[in-house]
Figure 1 (cartoon, helix red, strand yellow):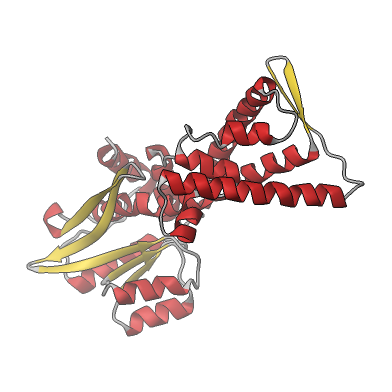
Figure 2: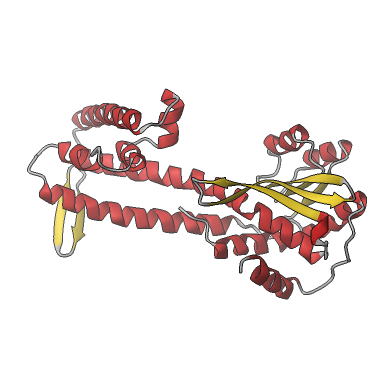
Length: 302
């Protein structure tokens, strides 16, 4: 699962234009999920045709196979790796295999009891691939549907989290470049996130003489209490957010924290006030945002 550079640029562009960036993430989630669903259906056809078992154990044999990656085994059982780690305080492959098999058995029994109770329920899921089709019973269909639901939830949670982290650094750099802040007046500290495949920013600072001012970016909904709590805990000097409630703004003002709300007309221009308050050298900006973003992106994402 990756957040492409193009999507990152689209998100930043929408943020600075005061538009809702979420459609970019939703579109990526849909694309990732639909590709997973197609690949999953192909594997189901192959596994069902190769199996001589007339029970639903063909699914367990093929999709909870210990030779598969641990993440796939967890999803195929109706769980995800994070849930297993929270349950057992560990996510080694051995634990994932045991947890997945145990959960699958419980899930299968629950579905079996449901089907036996709901006598009038008749559902057949037919999957056709390369001219060959397989029919899934009610129990098999519900297991497949459950797996798809779990995968969708995993993609959604992971990609929303990734989106915010992926655009933090280029968003702050873009704001600095729009206002011609010299490179000597800001810095970013990174650490590698092996799971995400990109450098995850730890901190972004504006610098004046020997003083460093911490900047925080949060792409959360208006009124989210986590936002204000985070900047207070980290002694943030500049807080850039998609949306802020009046309560958020009052709280930040009381704490002397410079804030920038992007989801409003020319919201990004409040960054100039933060630069002024902190004494960071800069130039006014009143250019062609669309054109200037193209130039900045060509530099940042080259």
